Image (cartoon, rainbow, N blue to C red; front, side, top):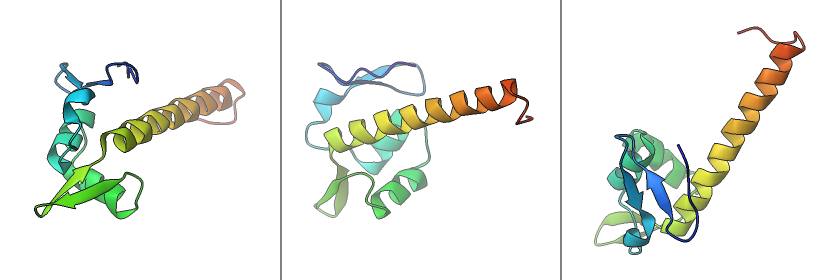
Length: 98
């Protein structure tokens, strides 16, 4: 699964299709953001509550700012990859069992 940050800002959706984030310039709904990353809407709600992703309210609906969402997802993916690497090193050194 590849994240392209520029120029097209393409995100894979869990069903294998891609979404061009430039089309979401007005913002993403919680449901759209959840579908893009394959997480429940509650997960997105928690990100908003913790102020990890910027959003604005418009007509009673929360719209997630595209650039903030892309930045958070890139950092989250990097952290996951780093954790997997640390786990692999620990296993190789015999410090960690599955």
